[in-house]
View 1 (cartoon, helix red, strand yellow):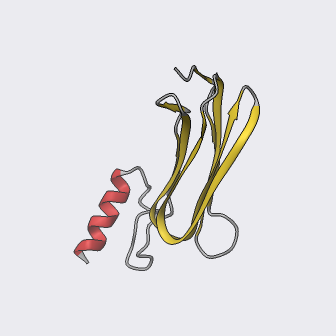
View 2 (tube, one colour):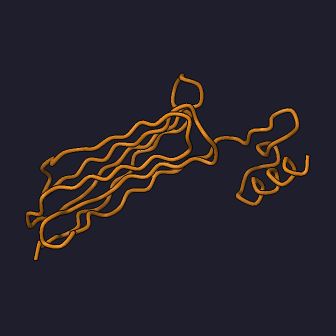
Length: 133
């Protein structure tokens, strides 16, 4: 019971309402997830990379992310990840470096029970000039 009370206190500290915190009748907190993408980053003079990270406050049935990389508006490729029975997913996308303005578009999602996504969100970066030097 002490662990349940501690979990409820943590949920409240993270901004959940008292109704969302864990209770004896519903020991799992309300699902909370977030997606992070990085700005395109030059690696030496050879590559440009970015990554997508999706994380939730508890294990979900399925979790995933998608990351598209663009240079001067041209689609360069994508990477995607789908994992099961975990709270975290991460995927890196790397392309050969060619000078230009790079940007990233990402999508993250999580599913609790095989039905519609309980969480989904799209994010994007602004163009970042990369010189490859």
